[in-house]
Structure formats: C-alpha cells, structure tokens
Length: 291
Ligand SMILES: NC(=O)c1ccc[n+]([C@@H]2O[C@H](COP(=O)([O-])OP(=O)(O)OC[C@H]3O[C@@H](n4cnc5c(N)ncnc54)[C@H](OP(=O)(O)O)[C@@H]3O)[C@@H](O)[C@H]2O)c1
Image 1 (cartoon, rainbow, N blue to C red):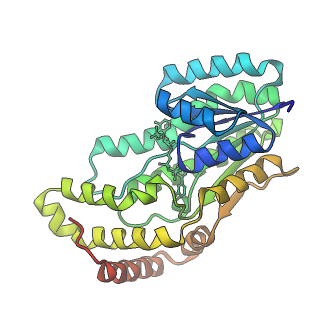
Image 2: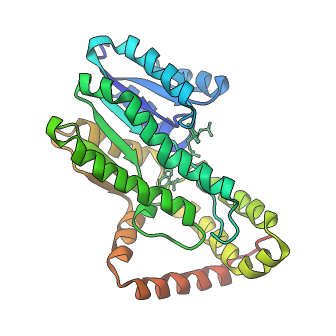
C-alpha cells in the first residue's frame, strides 16, 4: 500500500494509544508509535506493518528532539498529517495528601509534555497540513473528588487546546479534543490495585480521614470496569476526527463523557451534593475495605 498520510501517536504502548496506532495502520496511515521501552517498541512493530515505533517519553526534551529528527527525515516534504497527543497518567488521591512529586508528574506528563511535543512537531504539521488531537477526558469538564491532579491536567489541556486552536486559526490547522468517559484500559484495570497502594501510602491520619473516599473510588472503579468502553471505540473516533472533511472541535465518547458535561452545567452546589451522594452510595456498596 502506498501510504502518504503520516501520524504520530504518543503513549502508544497500551490502551487507547495502542488501539489508535493499530486502527490508523489498518486504515492506510503510516504510524509513528511513541513508546518508552524497547520491549514496547517490539510489541508496537508486531501490531501492524505500517507502525514504526519511536522512543518518546513526552517529559524528556532530548527524546522529543530525537524523535522529531527521525520523523522529519522519514516524512520529508510530505510532513505530518496528524499528531495524537495521547500519553497520560493518573491515580486517585486526595489533594491534601498527594505527594507534590506525583502532582508534578501528572501535570508534566498530561500537560507540559503535550505542549512540548506539539511545539516540536508543529513545523512538520504545518508542512503536512496536519491535525492536532489531544486526548482529554470527561475529567476535563468535571473535577471529581480524589482526582484533583488528574482533573487539573485535563482542564489545563482543554485550555491549551482552545488557545492553540485560536493561535493557529490563520493557518487552518485543526485542533481537536477527544473526550472519553471511562475506557477499559490499564488505568482502570489496575485502578483497584493502584488505589489500594496509594491508600496504604497515606499516613495513619490520612487513612482515617479518607477511608470512605477510597472505598467509594474502588467501588466506582470496579463497577466501571463492567460498563467502560473498549479502547477501540475511542480509536474509531480519532480516525473519524482525522478523516472528516470538517472535523468537530470536540468529540465526547460515551455516556460518561456527556454526564460530565451535564454536571458542569449544573449549579456547583447541586453537583457537589449529587457527587457526594454517589460517593456515599458507592462506599456502602464496596465489598472490601480500602486497605
Ligand atoms: N482509561 C480511561 O478511562 C480514560 C478516559 C479518558 C481519557 N483517558 C486518557 O487516555 C490516555 C491514554 O490512557 P489509557 O487509558 O490508554 O491508559 P494506559 O493504558 O495506561 O496508557 C497510557 C499510555 O501513556 C504512556 N505514558 C505514560 N507516561 C508517559 C510519558 N511520560 N511519556 C510517554 N508516554 C507515557 C504509557 O506508556 P508506558 O506503557 O511506557 O507507561 C501508555 O502508553 C491518557 O491521556 C488518559 O488520561 C483515559
């Protein structure tokens, strides 16, 4: 197949990113899959012949520059037709006790990293008339308890995307936000374990204060595992956004994403009360204690 559309997908080693890389590869795109290890590179290569892995930690300026050089040479005058900023991290923790290093890591990965990658690849995107996609979230609309740092990163990403879109308006380079609700990936599958570990790292006092909140999160994670969307659904939306003649600015994916928007429109005190009631109910339904 003669492939003349080039895409870079960050965080392509698992979950949504891997699914996007595979879907684009199957749909005639040449895909550069950003991964962080040689083992992940081998796995990405094995997914589809059109996938070429590049080592790319979005928080590492040296790796960003090296990946830019490789991709610039490989795409030549064609440039890049899509940048999918997908890499992301997040774990449940109350703001009061979240280690500052952890808060920095979430913001550094989910926001600063995306900005740095976008800056580095904009010359190639200009050359190729490309589109920029950010993997936002329902958490970019409503900040749930225990997810302060993660929600802060996704709210920030929404702002970055809005501003960038307006910056780039004269050149008609589309900037698109994908906003999924719960998706069945490592973040959710390992959620129970990660949440338990995070709880166990709290001080005795912290555990006493927040045991119910952790039980609520675990219970919600367990029930979301049953109803969460498959990552392929998000990948299909990304493909649609990249190939639509006139892409939308935002693509909510799944009911949870719409619910997040709805909560955002509510008076904040009413949203607080509803979220707290759901938390209490979830904590009651939890079959195991947080620790
Ligand atoms: N799952 C959901 O319910 C959900 C909902 C809405 C939005 N999202 C967003 O979707 C995106 C993908 O998450 P996912 O659900 O697919 O989770 P995932 O399976 O854990 O994938 C996260 C990806 O990000 C990569 N990553 C983490 N830190 C990185 C860094 N510093 N540099 C480069 N790559 C890095 C991971 O690479 P390693 O394998 O090397 O760690 C992995 O490939 C995230 O932005 C997330 O916030 C997820």
